[in-house]
Structure formats: C-alpha cells, structure tokens
Length: 142
Image (cartoon, rainbow, N blue to C red; front, side, top):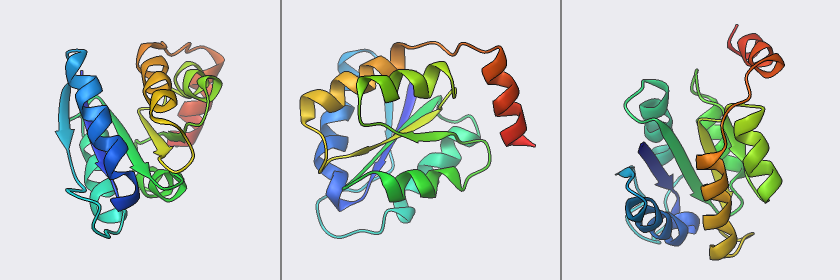
C-alpha cells in the first residue's frame, strides 16, 4: 500500500517513527513533510497529502500534530477525504469498519509511541464493513 504521511513540527517525531514502521511492513511511504521540529503550519503539509489520497496517488494517509485535530480538519477540507482523529483501538477500528476512513490523524502530545503504532496497525488491517455504512458515506459525498 502507498501511504501519504504529513505532520507539523509537533508531530514530526511520530511521523518519522511511523515511516519506519510502515516500510518494515512492506508499505511505500510518501512523505509530505515536516522535515524537522522547526515551526511549520500544518496546512502546508497536510493539504498536499490529502490531495494525494483524494486523487488516488496514495492509497491512504496518516497525519500528525500536537493534538491531531487541526490536521484532521485540514485533511477533511479536501473532497473525497475521510480523515478520523484516532486516540484508541476502538476509534482506529471504527474509522475503517464504519467510516471507510482513508486518512487518520494522530496527536503526538496525547499518545505514546507504542499506542500510536498499535492504532495505525489496527486501522491498516481493519476492513470496511460496507452495507448501511456505505449509505452514510454516499450521503457525505453528495
């Protein structure tokens, strides 16, 4: 799977950690920045990553910030993106199973590194259930 990654300065460390985690599992990573912990506005990196997912250049995307909220908001402004803020095993699972989330957002200041990688693994492996959930997604897209 080809996965877009993006962060602001507050999510840089987990973005780098996630890139290694994904590559170790055979995924291709496309890194949209940040390149360091120097201050950076998250729309500058998140929007290009979200566009790559929406346009099909990347299969999914993961974005990181301090809380993950602003990054999710930025990603969700791109038509065709369904970005969920993930903070637990259940939110990771339901983001895929019920919402067919093609992107997730994670707050580096709110989760441990081991939690982050566990939640990403769950999100990557959970299939979309379709059915009544697809009807809701179709309504979002109209």
